[in-house]
Image 1 (cartoon, rainbow, N blue to C red):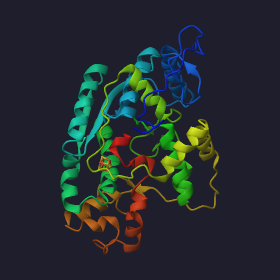
Image 2 (image 1 turned 180 degrees about the vertical axis):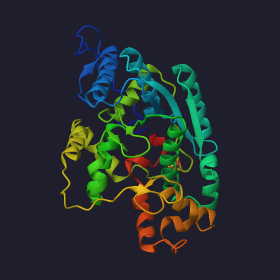
Image 3 (image 1 turned 30 degrees about the horizontal axis):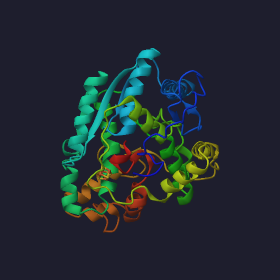
Image 4 (image 1 turned 30 degrees about the vertical axis):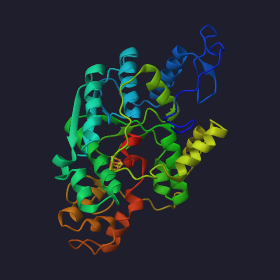
Length: 362
Ligand code: SF4
């Protein structure tokens, strides 16, 4: 177990009184502020901070139908629980439901979906599951059998993003909420700076994205630390699934994530500071941004003739899976240069919207 990492058990406070209520014994040290705090006060500040983020950013309107992207992992389980609590407590008036994606990974997703099904009952939120098999005609098991364990997460990430949008549209949702947390967003800011990806840098700190697309996506955990999510789930004894995907690349965390964890160890505020830096970046008006259109084939939002999912699918269906990864010749009269740019793994890979790994949650 990683020392001080997202899976580490909460560090217990030692014999002091809670710095918030000054009455009960402190039970933990808050990772975000290093305050010694009791459980009850921790629950309150954790939930109140999320409520304030929702209110300050006008994330929802009364009567909206909101899909909670649910993988059964810690982030989305806490998100489902907290959203349903806050909705009730503060009368948001939201019609919440759980939306899960079945990638078709035997021994992994089938088990984590069982967790989501238990949450459906426990939180009283209806569940809709959309599958890769139904949407694309392929399961991840079949894809991995065809392409092996290289680039599998590129397919999975691109397909998942679209599957969530399609599921939300099918269920007539007005919004989709995902469990992306502050650590994820700080990581994306760093990656986009290192890559010089101006288009993504300018939008990766937005709390709501896709307002011009089919379903706007919101991140109520934008300022919530991963370690606090783990603590909350641990103390509340929430039922979540923490096994890693059987197709997960070993080094999925990568440099940026480790770097952020190091910074956090030295200075907990570093995560928030990186997010604030990302928010304060201004893109020069002369910078050419990709124009959003729709995919010629499926109608999904795309800045190219075909969306990424259709391009990857074309490769799979033609028995040329590498086509979708941008190493092969053009397809069906597509502009080869555009296609290859569109399909370079680094461009399809690690945007926060298509988060690479199920173990990191949606
Ligand atoms: Fe999909 Fe994540 Fe598994 Fe990769 S590690 S195949 S992205 S669930």
